[in-house]
Image 1 (cartoon, one colour):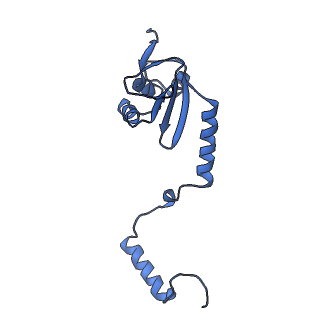
Image 2 (image 1 turned 90 degrees about the vertical axis):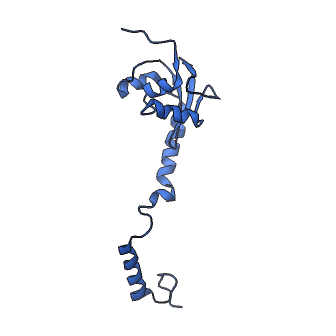
Length: 143
């Protein structure tokens, strides 16, 4: 059985800890400046040690974790979660962010469709001709 290394590349650790699906995705996120180690911007080849603090962003979710172990193998999720410990502040901020997104979702996310299709457009035109007349809105004001 091989021993755990004392240091390893940040991109490989992020992949082993299952923050990103592939190492190349981890490298892309690091290159975009979305990963910081001990408060400094990281590069993909940055050496990571046990006890380092890693701040990263996965989509809209920001996380801060403390490295607890290093592993050269990408294992199942329960094993990968043993490689780090998320800070209390990060957990609190993540739950508050999730609650905020639940209560006030991004308006653009509510859009189901883009432009109306030809059928939708005809339905709108028919509705306009039948009931809307010259009004600029569909309200029931009798002005």
